[in-house]
Every structure is written in C-alpha cells, then in structure tokens.
Image (cartoon, rainbow, N blue to C red; front, top):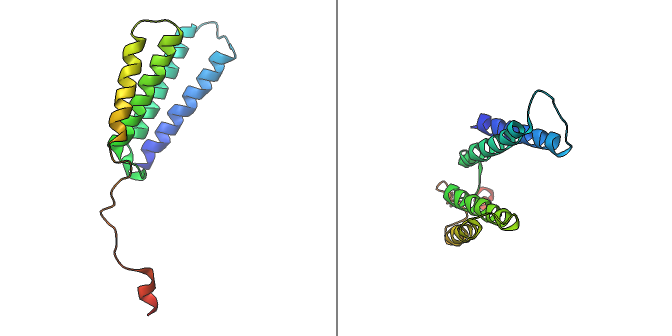
Length: 125
C-alpha cells in the first residue's frame, strides 16, 4: 500500500503544478484553459480518493475520515456556491453540516486489536 501513497502524492503534486500554471496565466497556445482546470480537479480528486483508500497507515478510523472529508468538501463547495450566488448553495451547506454532525458521533481513533497488556517494567524484575 505504500505505492498507493506515492501515486496519491504524485497526483497532488501534478494538480498543484497545473494549478500554478493556471494561476500565473501561463498560456500554451495549442491547449485551451478548460482542460487544465479539469485536469486539476481530476488529479486532486484522484489523490484524495487514493489517500482515503490506504487506511492502514492512518491512526484514524477510515469511516470517520471519509465522513469528515466529504463534509468539509460539501461545506466548502456550499460556501463557494453562496459567494458566487449559484443555485443549490444552501443544500450543499446543510448537507455538509449534517455530515459533519454525523462524523462527530463516529469514533475518531482506530481501535487497536493487537494491544499488549504486558508492562514494560516486567522485564527488569
């Protein structure tokens, strides 16, 4: 699963690189601007999904992580829609807040099944 983290990091790096090209208005004559923006969205989404699919390295509960990040995504989209006066902003905001409420009641930490009850000082006696 280490390769999943590496691929996720590459996706995030490429998305940030393309986003900087768009931000600094670097123009490539034969490629329109819209595919750049769609590539940033696709690579960012792929990086996030791949990062969520490798839960064994995380100390958090994977269900909590998915609920939390989905809630944050919906809330940020709702705020963006509200600023731009686009429709359905209220629904996005409310659904993000409701998912965050659900995530608050989920256990955040992962339960460790392989806990040992031995004390460290037992070896010295």
